[in-house]
Length: 450
Image 1 (cartoon, one colour):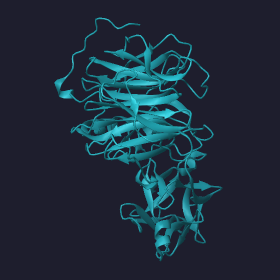
Image 2 (spheres, helix red, strand yellow):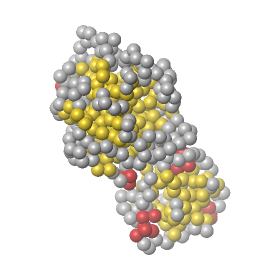
Image 3 (tube, helix red, strand yellow):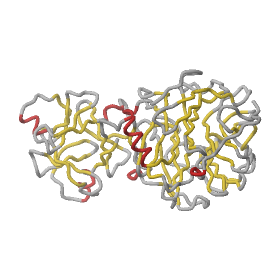
Image 4 (cartoon, helix red, strand yellow):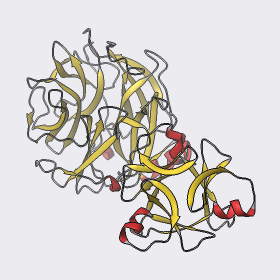
């Protein structure tokens, strides 16, 4: 479909909108994603949202349930992308694919409009091309020279390339054309405009690495790759580039190739135009639980408050190990331990941190998926037992939350009735022990997160 005669009135107050550049008005972030887990018990192909004030540690909204789900096409989405438009409102684009059957061909994208992400209107599917191929992983950007938005997505025209269509309203689009075809297969492009430079980050299908390219115009086939390949863990995809709200740095996220691996890794740089990305330690960030292939955009404090009021923050927590930050506290066979994330059943890592059963000034850990059971110590080992409401059980299941013994910004938990002992892991198993060494202090320190 060729776009003709369409005009859009842009707000002067939104001069940097549509580029995902940092804005002085932004003080928080929102993350859009879908969910999967190793055995796919968490698979949900609706639009999920999480919020963060630092852009690193995330709180899922709506108890990590979808806030909207497609009602046409495959009835599911992957790869949701949020763009703040020139008028300050949002548009959401997503792959029209429900599940993991990647052999399906689909010429459409899901599209919603939203004023502030507390509601979603104007749902439609937009046809992007007439090829017998997929339409995956959309990204969008404002092209000032054209006076239009570019929608870039992965497709195959005999080779795996990025296609682009231009639009003024995300309803009618120009005829598709090749946007980036470097001579090898590419997947999952993310385009961000910074001043007069357009950055395109992508996955090289021949190497499994993430790369960055740039252009002075953003025109089709104008990009030159300028970075070395990036990877953490196993093969990666879905690069996600975001400028800090402070305007002083950048982060790059990469999604793991499979839900059985850690879902996201991250890098940072102070200069996106240089080949100088530094891998972040997993202690510094916690992606939304079970999140897959999403997008991040800056939001204002008012938008953050509106999102949390509308959708609610989690009524559960997770406990992340300080010295094994890829592991979280969970129960298995009614024993407490720390295991690598992601895990199944994924609910085993979810806790309601309630007022202490023996002392309301303390805390107790109630299992989300076995709500009659709590973590308690017994012969110094941590077990998941049914609350029999005895004084002994209530005392064994109560802990005093204190500043982290190895990092005061994290937390440690002192036993209520054996006050010289703290909750810690040893050989990945949880117990309460006296703490004396630096290793002990690390073992007894956790981040309370979502």
